[in-house]
Image (cartoon, rainbow, N blue to C red; front, side, top):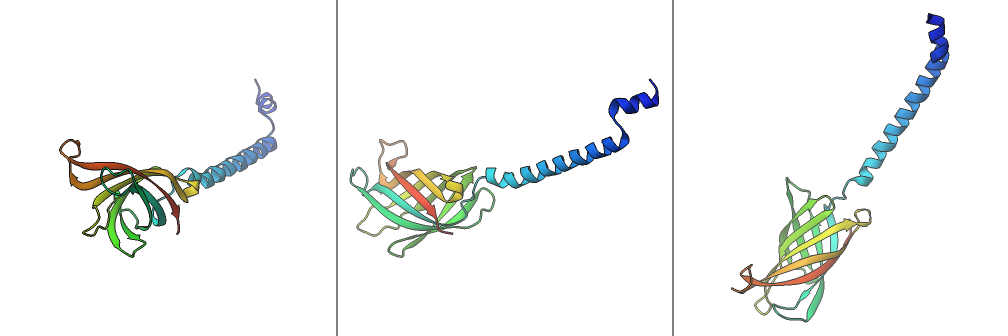
Length: 168
């Protein structure tokens, strides 16, 4: 095969340059498209301010439910967990912790309690949805401060639910 036969077989030099330019443009376009789409697939961060509507039993073993709202300020994570400040409608503030794996978030804090109410630790577990703006159908485990030797946790436990909306 002669050199001129090879040129005719693969195309002329100007055609090759034109084809390489088009291929380069296509590759650059794909890189920009993929690069801009990556944040969409990344999990939204829990960091920020959230309004949570919490529904839990009034006390251990009680079937009456109470619903209340708290504001959660979630600071940026340091390592595996972040800190939270939780404020209820009465202006009481407590500290807590949060953790996130992908879209799944857990928040733990102590209910502010007075002498006439049951004290408890709340563990909230939910999934960030709606482009990072909501948590729907979250679950709560309530660990009451009342000992119960028949419960594997050694304290009374209950279940509850929550939903959340990002404020900031």
